[in-house]
Length: 70
Image 1 (spheres, rainbow, N blue to C red):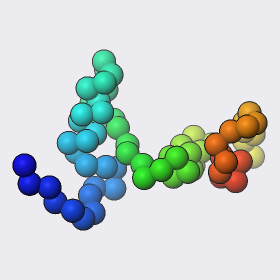
Image 2 (cartoon, helix red, strand yellow):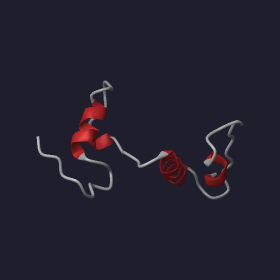
Image 3 (cartoon, rainbow, N blue to C red):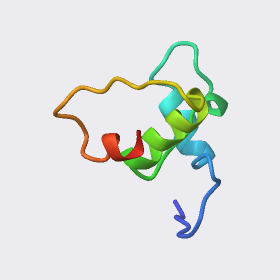
Image 4 (cartoon, rainbow, N blue to C red):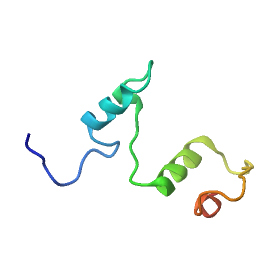
């Protein structure tokens, strides 16, 4: 199998997203996002789910940058 090194789609490689989706019953590859790390994933979620003025409750200890991103 030939492996190409370089940039992939912003949402993650289609093959990887499809493979991750097989781990769940009702998810397709189009429903999956792949992030380069936890901080990027936390920021993406918070940016999509929260509005200015919303409050966030986070336990401590937690992932180190969670509080920085929040």
